[in-house]
Length: 363
Image (cartoon, rainbow, N blue to C red; front, side, top):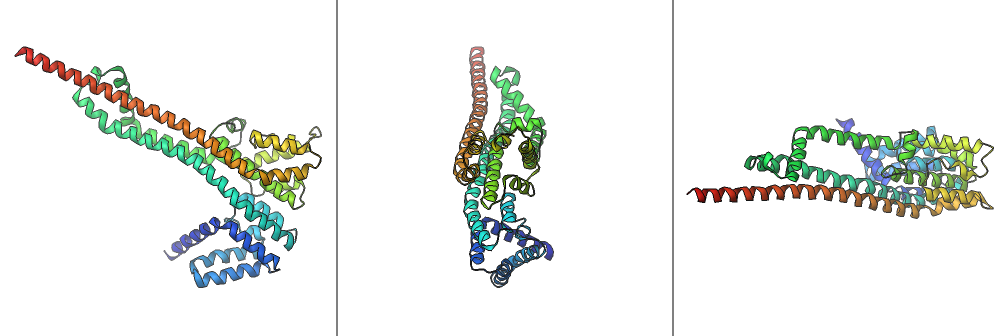
């Protein structure tokens, strides 16, 4: 039980450090500028944690072990995301002064990439939440409201739209559990496939929402990572090869194709190599234009620095379109339920009036 509690505390400490990565990178940069070794800095953080928040000290101990056995990228594995690890891994070989400058740049980049990630999460979570909410309403309607109506008036006497509602409600009532499992499996499979599925079909689906949201985010992170590496003096090919180290299977699939295209003698500009579907059309065009300029490397670096705000806006626009479509679908679902209910209720009212009239006539 004690080990489980320690594990939970360490996960919480890691989550808190992940949330303030930008400040952490900036603090490391300041210590390097003052020529303080990273090991000394992390040891100081570990000692301070023992005094202020002992539950966070094991996290810094893990970082010290990673730094002692490998590198800063190894120490921050599990805290920094893959694109940040790529940049940190490259910065370790350029000297403390350049590394300090690179960590400051990384600190600024993280603030904007976190906004991108937040926009991407909202883009996916909101439509899914709306769909689940309306699905729950449909299930409640099918289980409680429709059966009550069926007890008052046989479904055979319902109007056409009421009978359609009864058919849907009856299907939900008897097969709702299977439908729910299918939806959960579909959402789980979609999330799992985002970073892993590689096939020609995936390349086509990446052009449409919701897969395009992941492509836009991952593609922008790729350009930011490569431009940051090239900013440190690393060649384009070496930057791409380094990017493969911490990339997802989906990204490695694209990176391998980019490298193959770069090796092709028919590739005139390096922008041609990036036309694999890993980037949005707008970003793909910017890379192509940069590769045709007088100083393509400098132009490419500028794309990485200047694309983040535009990608955030692009993701938000895509999210807005997807949310609007989902609201339209759910609106039709609600209209169908209400129309079926009121049409059936009116039929019942008419039947009750007719019965009342026949009773008065009989008397």
